[in-house]
Length: 309
Image 1 (spheres, one colour):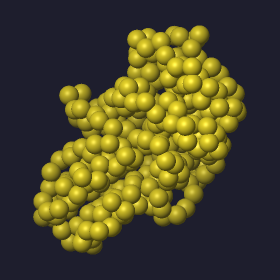
Image 2 (tube, helix red, strand yellow):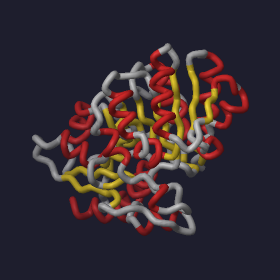
Image 3 (spheres, helix red, strand yellow):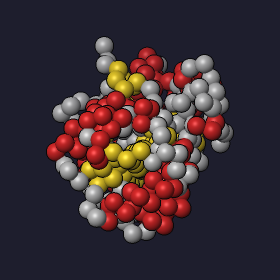
């Protein structure tokens, strides 16, 4: 049975582990450390943890200043607040001068199911992807999340990391190498290819099992780095199939699907996108209810795949 693990827990504990080795790492949070799991840093290395309160603009400006004196700031909030509240500070004060700040958006997508549209980020990839100099990463599981923290620390420049609130199945292996800007084929297929990120990779794998019973072979590719996009890899994975699918827990406008369409705009290919169809989120009893309501399911992938075939 596939192990299910918390991406937030993996992030928070790995950040502390690396911070113990690298004294340059400092952590800032906007009154949500229990949810973002930066609380582990507060408990274990409190002298390098800064509680900024509900003041994301100040938090990002402070992080910019810390980076200028050689620190590696990891700033934490829910995705919708980490991106939306301090957009101007991110653009003007961090991205333009290419400062070494890591922005970690927790509870991404619809994963904060109880708090509704105000707390659910369905447009953050689009916003951050459009900012020059910004790296955008969506870890697929806890294993990859730990590697993303490691590689983001080594990378010099602004990075946005999008972390799911809920436990997700481990798709990758400890032996897999994560590299910023590199797509990863999870399983091969001959008829169609699906490029997915986050939760939707596991949904694609479930859809693949159903499609195999119907004589359709689906290649599943994890696109954890949305920007810089692995255009060469995407073209390679697409060249010998009958059609292409994309799947993301994000608006179909400006996210992974849009990035794939841009990358393949000069190719003679058929593409169908699975994502949130230009709507905000809403409150629900559980995460699964929202996934069903917004058609982010294996069944939705199967339906689109059969349309392509």
